[in-house]
Amino acid sequence: MTSLAIAANGLRKSYGDKVVLDGVDLTVPEGTVFSLLGPNGAGKTTAVKILSTLITADAGELRVGGHDLAADPQSVRAAIGVTGQFSAVDGLITGEENMLLMADLQHLSKRAGRRVTAELLERFDLVEAAKKPASTYSGGMKRRLDIAMTLVGDPRIIFLDEPTTGLDPRSRHNMWGIIRELVSDGVTVFLTTQYLEEADELADRIAVLNDGKIAAEGSAEELKRLIPGGHIRLRFTDPAAYRSAAAALREVSADDESLALQIPSDGSQRELRSVLDWLDSAGIEADELTVHTPDLDDVFFALTGSGTAAGIPNQPNQPNQPNQPKENVR
Image (cartoon, rainbow, N blue to C red; front, side, top):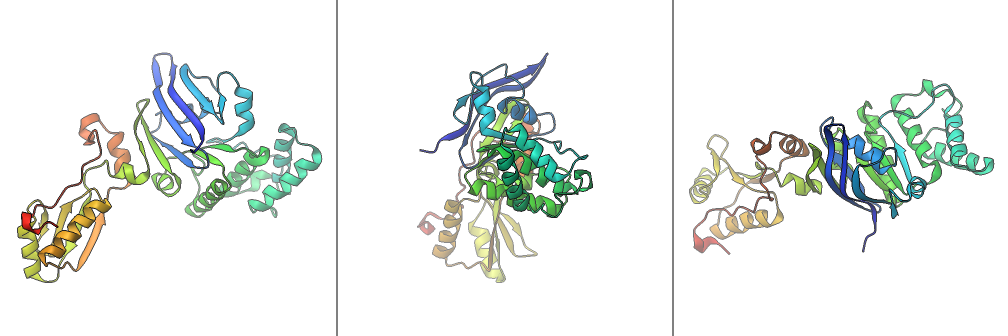
């Protein structure tokens, strides 16, 4: 059984009359990437600050790294690293000096501090810039240095609060590679991000936070299947085959100009197999079959929209079966 790096049950936090976190439940297995999404002001950073011991919760049972957050915050701090939205890098000193300062704060000996600093500067491709003031670094270099500083204490759980905000696409992709390397080494990453593509690329599980509550949680593919609009598209070059399929499949959208049919689908393997089996049993051959599913942008806008207007069912859609004569079903 996989151990949990982070477990939150009934997490609550208010500022005056403003409820920021309203009974949030989260579980993050060790050695995975967990991403918390939500609009600005949804409470993502507040959740990170609570779980990393920077502020206290109003209520909730919280465990990080196997330690009770309320009873033993010092042990939690020893197990985690935090990279916030705003860089902790001191621009007035060199990159190497920033690293050595962090080693001192971690109570490493001078020898150990220099060894760890050298290893991390090499790992994050900062050796050439190590002796230069950090103020001269590019945004991507500062972010790499920021995470390198976080790793000085060898934390097994890392909170990354919007780590790639403001980075260019190349720097962002480089950061993704760093995060993947950390996880391959067994590190757990708790990631908040404004980039939905980032969560899609990196996260094993994603939770969408809205109005202080978890609106939905699951893998990227599971979340995408919550949103209506997925479909299977069949395109034909033979007009007769197109007409036969259109006549048999009643609940489809037909495009006579391109000889294409669109069948509602949740994108699951089960539904795709059903359509393929039906085509085979009916003796109809499509020239092209493509599966279209909503992306995380669709999920985000729907789940953080206005209630029922967002069009989100309470449960994932059940697979739709093509309407066909009974004798054609295998």
